[in-house]
Image 1: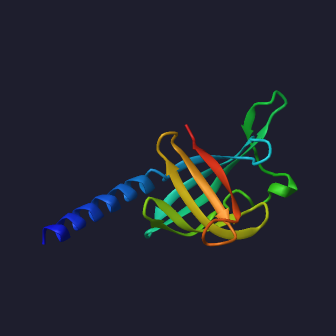
Image 2: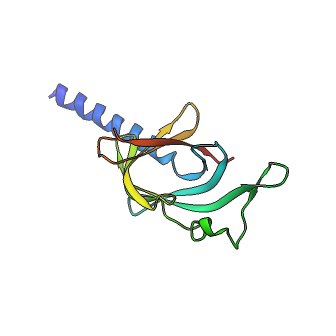
Image 3: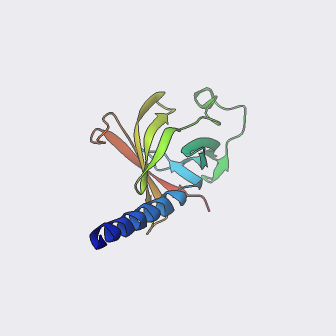
Length: 146
C-alpha cells in the first residue's frame, strides 16, 4: 500500500511540474531567421480548449540604419498573408513539452512538432521533423519578447 501511495505522489508531482513548464510557454516569442539570425517575427502562444495554438502577430525588417522595425502592410509579395498564420496545430501537453503539428509558412508544409521550454535561458526549443521520433528535422530557438 505504501509503495502505491509513494508512486501516486511521485506521479502527481511529475505531472504538476510538467504542466508548470508548459504554462510558461504561453506568451509572446520572437523568431529568428535560420540562416542570418535576423529577427523575423513575433508569435503569440496561447491555450484554447486544452490545445496550444501559435499565431504570427508581427513581422520585422531592418531599416536603413540596420535597426529592426515592424513591417507594415502592404507587405512584399513573399510576406503576404503571413501575419495571422497559425503555426501550431493540435499541440497538446506531453509531459514537460508540447507535441503536435507545426506549420512552416516558408515551405508551406506541416511537420511533426515538439516544443520544449528552457528554464535557464527562458527560451523555447521548437523542432519540426518528418518523423514522429524527431530524428529527421530542424530546430529553432525562440526568445521571449521583452
